[in-house]
Image 1: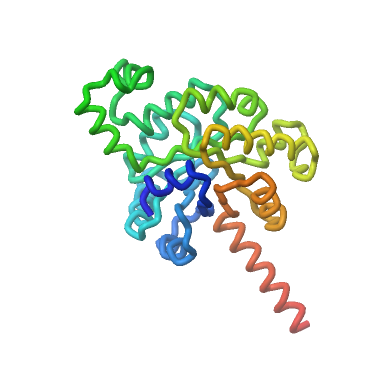
Image 2: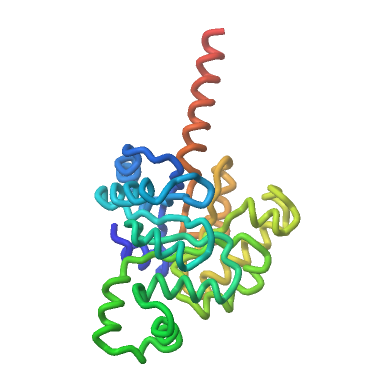
Length: 259
């Protein structure tokens, strides 16, 4: 798939599948390809990946036909531009909470390499740009995937305005941080948490963007959220959590069989 294919699927409500990557292994692109993943979610927010390693990972995934989408350390335009320069096909902006953040990141996703006053002009009225420039920017940025992590109550309160003022392709709920922002840490079965999830999904679909939740540890709960809230962005677990769970299960089985 190309980035534009993922973007179109997200906006159309079609199912898009991924998982998080935190380990810099040359084996992962082939694994993702064989699993039929739509894109690879590479996390640079919570992992110590340097820019060179991240760039190698992005180019390896691109070569395998799996678009790499990097979660940047913070919801800043300069961070998004750096990972795109390094070979990422898209970015995930963590803890996005304001219209200003969404607009600045939209400028990178849709009008790169414009900066300064020219990009503000483009954000205010794209049709004010010279036709040749607008056509160039549309072609150059057609594959850039922009996903926003929604992880706090201020983000939910402003979500309508954020989506109206930006060009986000999908919303991805960060359940742990969201539960903490709600004051009910890790209580994923709490009615208040479910209400917040439902609100995010509802607003996202109203604006015709993809919506999903990044979860691990309870696949039945994950499936329930997807089915009940009509989610179409499925980001399942991460390499380290999947490996850890499988290793523990296998070793427990072996211990029980040979004791």
